[in-house]
Length: 166
Image (cartoon, rainbow, N blue to C red; front, side):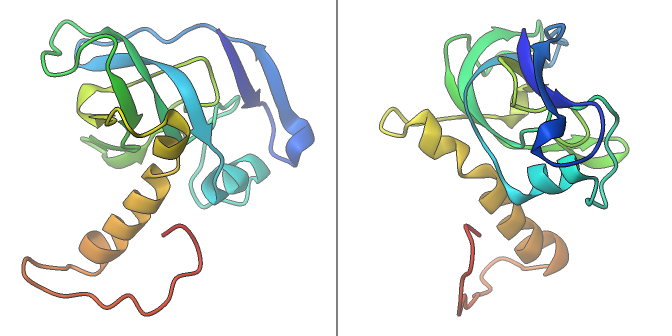
């Protein structure tokens, strides 16, 4: 498959468009043919080497992904091939939460594999481009409200200003 990846940290010139082996789908995973992948601040920090999150090189970035399910693992029953999905990039692992496009290869490729639970259906009226803009905003807001802010049921939040997609 074709992918954009980097073998060293730096500016845009370190990105290489190249052939790489396609991902093999595990029993609880889905293979998604990428239709849209948004570029966000985390992708830029990772590529430049200025992120506190380490990545193995070479690396395929791309946290925000939307596409079509191409194949499903043998244990997957609730996601079907052909489904239009957006990827929730936060993956729960025994080592703690990890992120597609950071700890695993991301969406700047023809295909990406993710746990089936991370493939969220896209309504027919939502485009792939629009769907791909949602994950980083959603994850950042969720992390701030629930993981860091310990927000509880029936609590109210006042959002008094906004300066980005979050």
